[in-house]
Image (cartoon, rainbow, N blue to C red; front, top):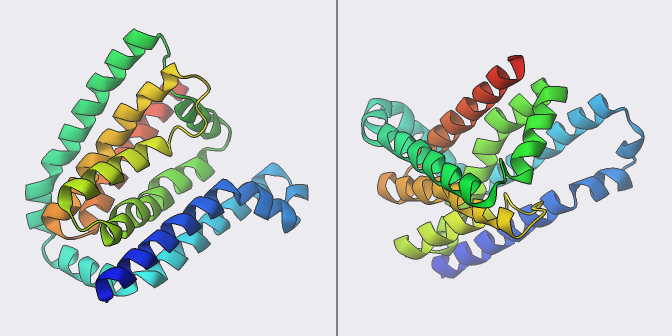
Length: 225
């Protein structure tokens, strides 16, 4: 019975997240926030994203608290055993990105271009959203939540990775650009694998945070140049 309950909750949480993310602008317009200045809109967006995150945390609070206690007590073990997967993720993403760029002559995905522009105009918002909120929300949704739906390790890893990659390409402007699902899915596969192996959600959260932090730092360095 608990098995089916987990699956139902997992599906509902996932669908709820998709709807709240896809129609975020419409919801904020209905609430009258479209009349605000852009900086205030971004503050409201951050609050909106935090509320979504807090909702998911509330749903999986027991697991999150237990995993956090375990992670805190065994942090050296987790670093020693799982940091290598971050380097693997970085290497595979770099290789596949280079191959795809050479094949398609597209320098970056539309999603990446959007983040770069946003970072240039509103760095504080982008840093908070990308480094502090996104790793937590995305790991809880795409790893912990999807794990509740798929108990089989292989099915979970493949599904988690592909869904994670695909949702980064919802703003793609060409068929060629869809090839970027490969580098976008790689961290999804690797983070999912580390969850199955460690059984602790803070392992992929840590790797995801490291990854996003590095990407933002690189973008900032490029912007300064």
